[in-house]
Length: 308
Image 1 (cartoon, one colour):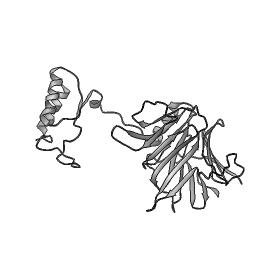
Image 2 (cartoon, rainbow, N blue to C red):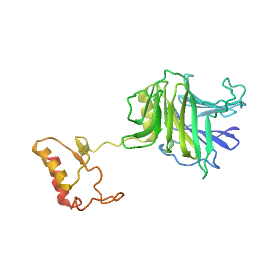
Image 3 (cartoon, rainbow, N blue to C red):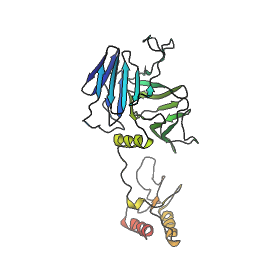
Image 4 (cartoon, rainbow, N blue to C red):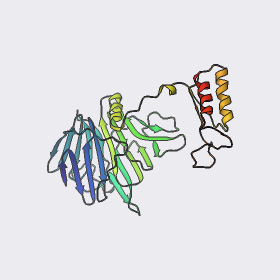
């Protein structure tokens, strides 16, 4: 069933409910779940402006939302497509089933665009699939991975943080859209030449955000507005940072700072990285090797060495 409530477009079928909400200029948030109610967490997203007035039309076969430069269409069988203002198809869900015989991609494969596999305990293993509309599409972003690829089209990425790996599941496409996988679950992203997919190993809902833009700058600016802007770095942190693996004692750290001063090399910050604690999980210095890090004399000495 297709319906709308306030500025929200809603699809409901069997145990699934799908919501599409305007979420900032030229952007929408898509959520779906098979739980009894939609989870309320916004995760990486800030609350959107409350003045959004998208244009929603519901007919017998489709429901359409137009919000600035982005348009969303949901068929009566629940397939979702996203377009820009010029009529260019940006995203199309990848489904291969027999539910809609009028769909040119109707198939006996029984692959769902939004696949929820129940997990004992209440959550779902979720896979969200999209058509790869252009094998020459270029995709950039997704955080920091140990790989040589700037264009990540054709790659598979783990959605998890590791030492030297920072997963930030936001990507910019050369087709003119930005995509945020707004789900903190461990999983993977696949940017194949036939299918683009995102997987969450354990979650309660599908959740992603899409923005249409003419330039990468517009897309990144919209992303910053939707998720929050980075505060200005304090002046004391704008210079050189010294860090190594690792400073074992308080005296070793002060010796390094004194050597910078002796050589008249400018330095703003020294990072005491890790293993300075007595036991794993203790957020304090080991008094055996760091006798008075909390005392004013230690910090006075260090600040004097760094700032002069």
